[in-house]
Each structure stands twice: as structure tokens, then as C-alpha cells.
Length: 110
Image 1: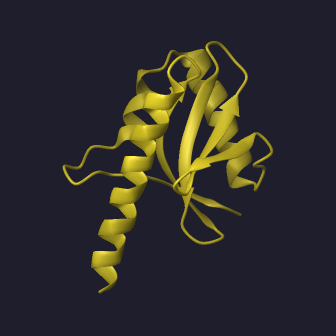
Image 2 (image 1 turned 90 degrees about the horizontal axis):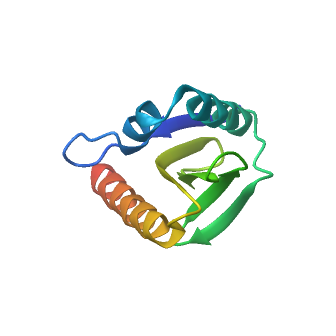
């Protein structure tokens, strides 16, 4: 089983959790179903978007997206979300968050 963890920035902001809480109940349910599928290892609606970041597509409403990075084989770090209306901004933000996560993780292990 895959373990999902939320990215927390240096100021303690939980970007993915905050975004999920802001969704209407129907959209939040669709995202939660996608997260459950990811935990079960189902990444069929996923593609790489560069710099170690992946995008999981949800075919609902405005086309919701989940952005994440993989920390080994069994841990997924949820770093953001968005819609297909502004993917380049969302992807760039997710890539910056993933780079920050890796940089801070490396410092912790040194």
C-alpha cells in the first residue's frame, strides 16, 4: 500500500490540505476517491510533468489535478492541486515545492 503525505512548506503551510478543504463537497469527494486509488497503487491517470513531479488527472468539473512527487516506492508527497484552466502555473508551483521538499530532506539527512 502507498503512503500519502502532504507537503508542508517552511512556514508550516499545508498547501494540498488547504486546497482540498476549499473545494465544494462533490469535488472534494472526487479528489478523495482519486487519493484512495493512489493509495492502492492505481496511477493510471498519471503522467510526469518534469522535475520529478507527477500529475494525476481527475475527469470532473474543470478538470482537477493532483500534483505529487515520489519519495521511494511506497511514499507519495502531495504537493498541490489545480485545474486544467491554468496548468503551467500549477505545475511550476508544484515543481518549486518539490525542489524545496527535496532540499530540506537532504539537509535533514546530512
